[in-house]
Length: 238
Image (cartoon, rainbow, N blue to C red; front, side, top):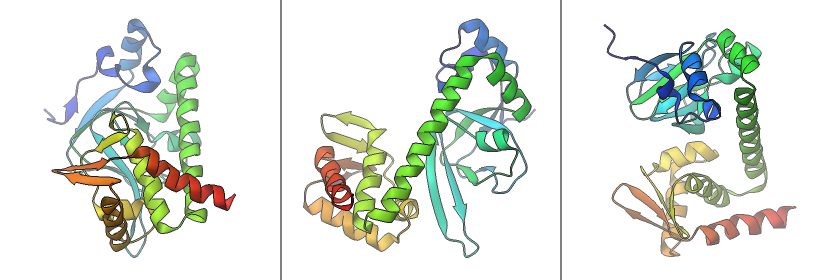
């Protein structure tokens, strides 16, 4: 028996955004179309330019969508956490995979073939609606990154990325805790710079009291101030 096999039921779909408007009976029907699998930390789930077409839904864990140049330089597009999906682009346009997807931590996922995914979209309007909303959010995210790369200097791109990471984390007033703490190399890969630039700017922000570190946590002490740092530069550009 495959230890990585994951049994799927209607309850397994609870918490996955695109299925959140389905009732219990509908979730049970959708679950019959899905298969489940567990991936270890660091395990490759999808390879760049693969001709596979499954759509994946994350039950638990976090995966990273990334790509490597021929010289080995990594560019990180985004991290995808429990409740979200990935792989939908190849299912929709039948093109090869646009990036690698790697499990950052032990992760459990559901997946369906492209044909089954299309059937679900046609049969359940709420899944189609949620998928369109998800794709719209993704387009906005990538559009924001293009604007930042073309208008912001390195230090302000670091500020913008910290804001982006902070918005999805635990929040107490304007204090946000990012855990686990991203490495300086990871932040650099996200914004197209080098690790040393990230190290320098995090040091500046720490001295200004904007961020601090504790154990395996990066704490943003003042989200509002960090937001102003980005907004002031963007307003000057436009």
